[in-house]
Length: 452
Image (cartoon, rainbow, N blue to C red; front, side, top):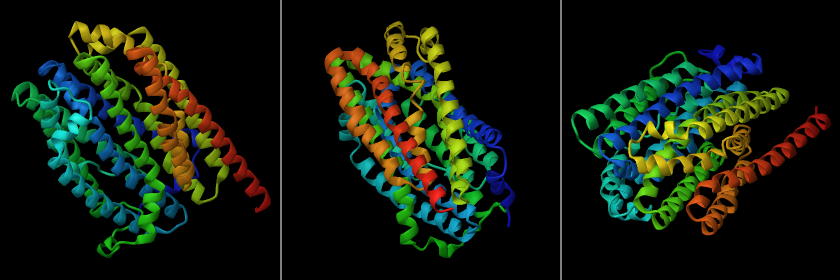
């Protein structure tokens, strides 16, 4: 079978070295994107002003939602692909990829239509002030028009064991994206539209083109996609959506949290608070990158070994992943506490932003040691096909924990409460997620004992 050696090693190599390889590769790719994100904010803040950076930040719920659609079908499709390959069913894997693409393309067209039509009321709903709104409208309209290119499905590529190509799908577009952002903003002076065009043309479209090459023209794959596979397979489509739905809920809920946060910041702190959040939020997101890399690196290992019923390898994978996430979180927490001004100074030269941003960064950094745990446990449940448990963590975490904590703590401690609410929420979610993980693994062990 073409490419079978890539995927079979997921079930044979040592978990530690395999997880390190996949996680480091995905982290490298994500770090490249994080560097782009930081430089993008830098170009907006330095090349235009902090309000432009705030305008792009206002649109972040849209980017999160678009990413949520891509992650929903990508995670669901990748879970099916991993398990199908583990079960030696390449045709099922190919049908899963075809139906994943079909779902995404239809959804992206719908998002583009309604997003461009209602862009003005959307940005005000998302918390824009009159000073920030023009930047947000220009940026958001271009992002909506490019929605069809907003993913390259690197998760599915990685599920086939092609980690290097998956990494290249991140790094090459990010390099192009960063160059175009510099060219459009700093040289051609196109303004905030330049940042959006760089994202759509240099990043998203190029990544999408690379994925099309992989799925339809690259020879070294474990499955071959045929035209007839694009006929809707309702059972596969339903499983894709069911398994990936927690990711969508997580992204949609994360968008809701950002929208609520922006509106609270607008009411409590105005333009300066929105600008601080735009810059510090981008730093936090970038520093979280390796934890996301660990999550993405572990998923194909989990899915493949679960498909082959190698439950001890599944258990080791999640334990090693959780340990790596906590260790990294402690390191970044210390770094953020010790050098907040230097970090913020990378993205802004405005004294007011640097002064206010230090407090925000220190308080947000309290969440780092535990911030990856609930996400990792939810990803574990997705990888083994347990959509219900993943949904409980993601949806319940936002609706029952994050939003109530944000509203309560901000009402008690004003702006300081907004910054510290993330740490309080993540600690609660950490405890809940670990209890759920322990309960499910105990059930799995009992099932092995009673039904060998």
